[in-house]
Image (tube, rainbow, N blue to C red; front, top):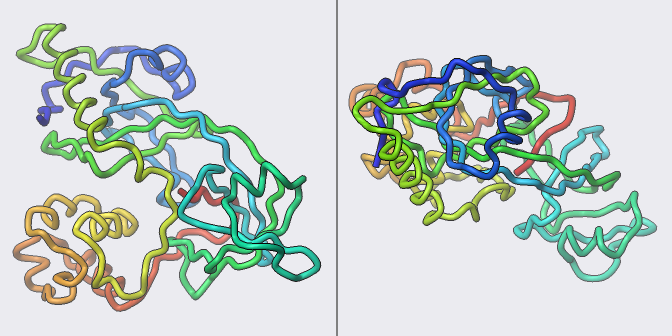
Length: 291
């Protein structure tokens, strides 16, 4: 089920994320409109105004803060399970690789660690690999988990948005009804959309994943994740419709991108460069949120 967001009735009251989470945390899903956006240091840390989102849940997440030898500061969820780490003492690995959570449970901070394979942040280029890291502290962060609607009212069920409470400038309005539906029918429609997300599960959220230099083995969903990394998510529906996976991506000519997929020339050039191995550099200082 999708929803014609142009027919939504919006409430007059505006909320910041904290007030919204506090008031509605026990009654999700809710549909919101971003009335005041947030521009962070990178695209992953920004939200545009006029974005329509189905807020699915409120998550309290424990995260660990890392510092790299290059001065980068980043954070990972404590429960991340796709990356194993060695403990480093006296410049040597100590024992087999274990999970981040196990390291934190048995070692005082700070502690030096090394991932099994160097982490490569998807938004950093120039071969910037994170090898040896120092865990400095942990903290708890509240996050609203939502899923955006396209301009045609299609819910992007595989495209979660994370709205952390530190986006204090963000203001949102709540959808209170939909033209042609009474209140009960509108609430049922929202519940149906939320149920579709429940069926998919949130297992893919907050999972660190390296973007490979060769994209041929990527699934259709993973190709769409790359489009979102490039801020080209408006083309995800077309790529899904044409079932363009990583292997097929290398056969799509620029003319096909423009004519069949509806891509603008600048965006075609951006995707071609990405296909050839270029990765966007979206920021070189400050804290990075990984996962």
